[in-house]
Amino acid sequence: MSQLSRAAMKWSRLMETAQPNRRLPSTFFLSPKLFSTEASDSSLGSADDQFFRIPDSGSVYGRVNNITKFTTKSDIINVLEGCNLNPHNLKVEYTRTYLPKSMMVEFPSRSAYDAAVKSINRKGRLFNMIRADKAQWDITTPYDGKVILLQGIPRNALIDDVERFLSGCHYDSSSIQMFVRPTDQGPIRMALVRFPSQALAMHAYITKNRGFCLNNQITLQVLH
Image 1 (cartoon, one colour):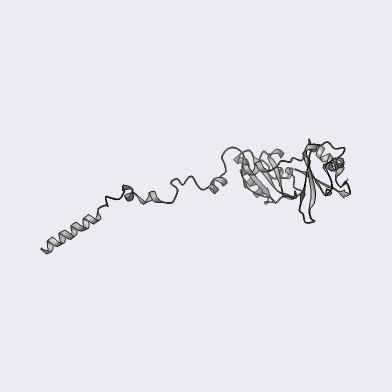
Image 2: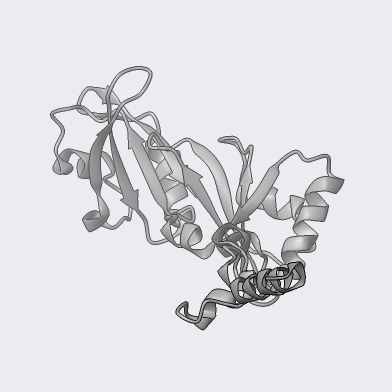
């Protein structure tokens, strides 16, 4: 066999090995982009991205931090001027021992939320606000100045004793809840009592704060 014939046969074998294997599925030869681990639609984003995305319409929620026990809803409304808020758009979040820790705010629109951010930045960031969602707003109990916390109730006191302590006040007797909370001074027995209005709750606070239930002096706190 001549040298030229041997070269032709070698070239023929190389061409055959370069052809796709017919026994493999056709998808094997498709573009590698179809096997990418990246999402096919980048506009979907991650769950975190969707949480922090502010909706263009509907209510928008925020959490105002750095409040103290003396911070009122009116204080926050004054700071967030121009946001079209009223007291019903705010809920105070409390710790387990009922110290105020933050305030949830329901803004009527995205533009109102943006105005609140600008207002906080303009006023030196006395408070700090972060985004929240509707679920966080929903689980926050609204007290609205109609609930009073009684602290220091004797361990042996009954609901009847609490009712005698509140004699002369107009309240919902079925709303009384008694419980114990750990504090720096040790476990303290407390009670929550709901009143029909803010005025009636404030009347009870003025007339009963520092009064005695059995032999214990009771401290009252209005929850907002």
